[in-house]
Image (cartoon, rainbow, N blue to C red; front, side, top):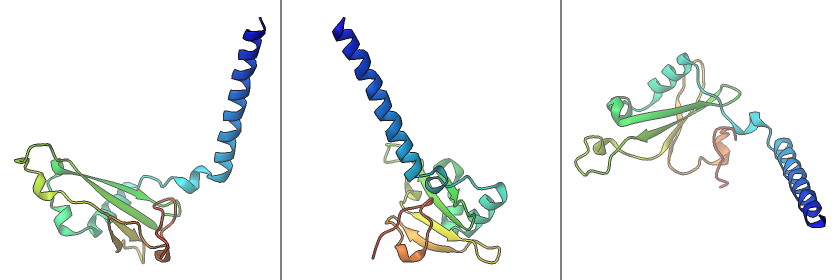
Length: 136
């Protein structure tokens, strides 16, 4: 009977520690500071228009562009995901690339202010809910 009691106490202590850990994470990293939001249809259209013509002309079956907008709605990140198969003859292979595009809303437009596969420099001011930054 004492082994069963010890097991029950252990499980309760384990659950209590998990609850404390979750509470600490929520306090340290509130949801709004770690998650950008989906763009509205108008934002998605305008941000897509700011992307390079070569990317916009990529066939839809070859790329999915994941677009997220910062919580303050002044920054956006567009990350193309190229849908390339394993075959060397895949017609989408010629479009494949890596990197991301970061735009900042200025006077109703979304000019691209960062392009690359590295993290943007911290001096660029990109909000943390979109991307971590690279200290320079």
